[in-house]
Length: 324
Image 1 (cartoon, rainbow, N blue to C red):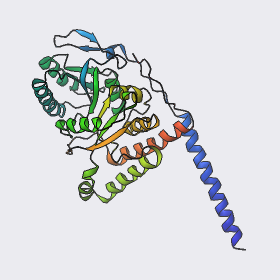
Image 2 (spheres, rainbow, N blue to C red; image 1 turned 135 degrees about the vertical axis):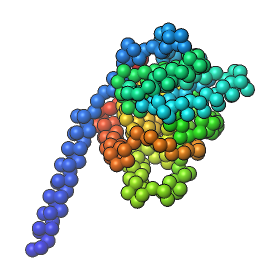
Image 3 (cartoon, helix red, strand yellow; image 1 turned 30 degrees about the vertical axis):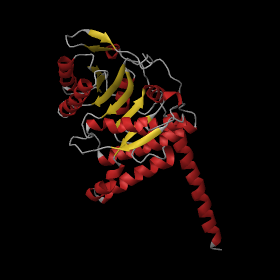
Image 4 (cartoon, one colour; image 1 turned 180 degrees about the horizontal axis):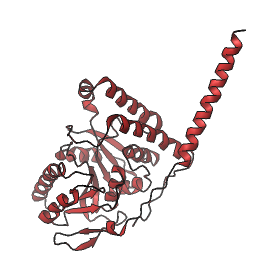
């Protein structure tokens, strides 16, 4: 007689689990938003060193430079100068040694409340708008949205995404360039190289609390289970794209907050774009915008929703599209 209540309990538990799963799928589908990639009129232009307005180019245009560096920045008036000084010193030295090397740095102010734009404009005045441009977004989009807007405004044959905190040594761009070149097959010249901190994981685990270590491994599992396999560190903010790969992936990007890297690599794998991972030097810098528990929780939710929204057709992979 005891078997029947247990059997019923298992039945009810299974039904309840299916109902919860169905509700999650429905919520993921219904809450999916189509990202508005149109620019506000103020976001279509940048200021030159003497204050004149000029229009940003489009990622759909042919490249006119060797390298573009996109620096997403939100309230970074204090940390940005350290990163920019290091980057400009490296880029200027490289150009001096090799005059055929051309570059630009695009600082994307993601609706900051401080003087991020004013700080970035000092570099435009020092180096000129051909080398440093500032794209000030009218409202905060999130890191993913800021990176996308910068990418869509780039002129480089190669495009590097680099965080404003300078946590990765800028000279490590040579590592990601070598990684990109190591890919022998680049369909339609599409390829991505991700800087990685995976080689530092043992050291970081030793310094983290048990709770933060649990969150880290939990996030890695969700990334592997739902979205991206074969990449150990999806979140390092130092990634190099061929122009063609940037256009293909960012045209389909929906997530604008912290989990955008995962969707970006998910899209790349869906399009069979080769992705390679190389070690970079990384130092933790004070002033991170991530709130450990809530940011990880939000990213975990986004990972589940990314997969479900593509499975249900709420989101679709896009062909390249005009965004300006």
